[in-house]
Amino acid sequence: MIGIFDSGIGGLTVVRAIIDQLPGYDIIYFGDTARTPYGNKSSETVVKYALQNTDFLLSKGAKIIVMACNTASSVATESMVKRFDIPIFEVITPAVELSIKTSKKFRIGVIGTRATINSGIYEKKIMKINRKAKVYSAACPLLVPLVEEGWLKKPETAMIVKKYLHYLKVRQIDTLILGCTHYPLLKEVIQRKIGKRVNIIDSSVSVAEKIGSFLKSHAEVDNLLGKNGKCKFFASDITDQFEKTAKATLKRNVCLEHVRM
Image (cartoon, rainbow, N blue to C red; front, side, top):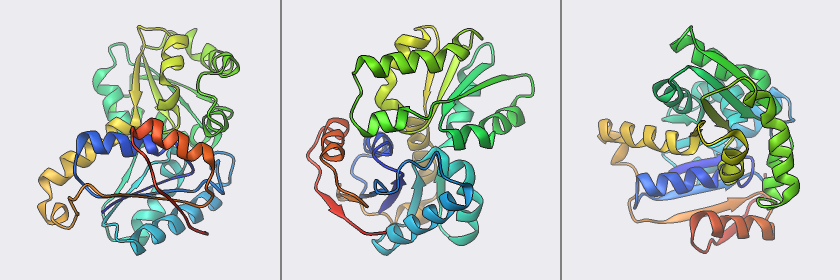
């Protein structure tokens, strides 16, 4: 199984992208809804959660792990790689690589949680590839709670998105990285507020493509993965909104199982 975890429902965008890119692969998903959001937690706490989440997914048969959480990816990747001797995928590097590949002016914006933005991970990775790139980042702490509440089309959400993006818009970015897997659920309003000329990088799509390329060149790992089209969903707190968002995101009914962490 492909094991995927996130702080809440945002990682469902990664599930959807993997289903699109790798149809038929078995998937197990854990949404840590009882402890969301991760973006306002300390690095130490996020690392602890990431390790616990991975232990759970491995106990359920996962053979590779996808950190469908930018906050965890920004602070826990090193600890994850040290602890677990399996392929670990994070959502930051694929998005960075795609942004450099597609940006014409190399004026790149990044939006994410406070923890992700404060880590400076996107700037470090972008500048490592292209020293001439200009990177502008903006923390958007209210967006994850709004998505978790299902306020995707509320006028209040549109106003908040506009406020957050103003800093980036006036800097005339040509590429915007959605540095949180919750944000693709707000992609329509983000595109409208940042402008149609700005290319939006969806990290969920980028990591799905990365996994697909990896499996094509690593048959020994690919052969370990089930391909019966089974998907299992677990959450540390079950809410009606999770089920509604899951159904809307994946275009299918989702049977959600509760697990205590």
